[in-house]
Length: 191
Image (cartoon, rainbow, N blue to C red; front, side, top):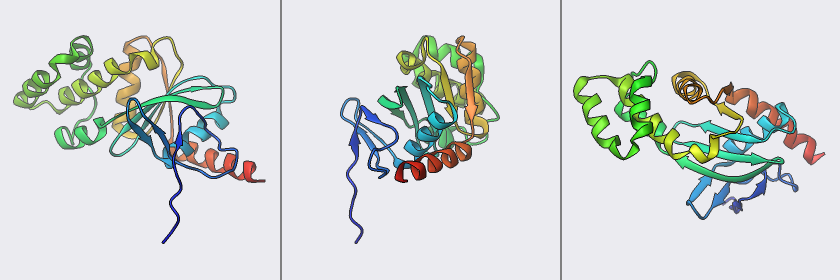
C-alpha cells in the first residue's frame, strides 16, 4: 500500500519547498484543493511571473477560486457548479447573461430561477443561473483583482464572459499548458 501524503494547510507556497506535490486543505470554509489543480496553479505562476490575483480552476466536478499572492495560495473556495451543470444543463451552449445577472443580484432566489429555467427548457439559462450564483459568492475573490480562468470548453468561456460583464476581464489559460509549466517548475525545484 502506498504511503498517504498529508495535505498542506493554506496559506501555503504553491511550489512546495521539498518538491513533493500535496493537496491543499482549508478549515473554513472547509475545502480540499487537489494536487493536480495545485500543479495548474504552479504553472500559472510560472507562465505569469509575479502574478497576484484570483484564479478560477475549472475541473470536471468542482471549481476552485484561489486567492494568490507572492506565489502562495492564501485562501480558496470550492463549488460544485460543474457537477450541477453536467446534471441540469448538459447540452448548454453557453451561459445566458440575463439569467446570470438575475441570480447574481438575487442569489437567494437560485432554486426558483433554476425551476423557471427548467420549465422553459433553457439549458443556457440554467447554466447562467448556476454561474451567476457562484460569481456572487466569490465577489471578494475577484472584485478589484486580476482573474485567470484555468479551463477549456463551454464553462471556461462562460465564466470569462460573465466576469467581463461585471467589469472584470478574465484571461483563459489552458489546463494542459498550466500543467506542463507546473511540471517544469516542479522539476526545476527538485534540481
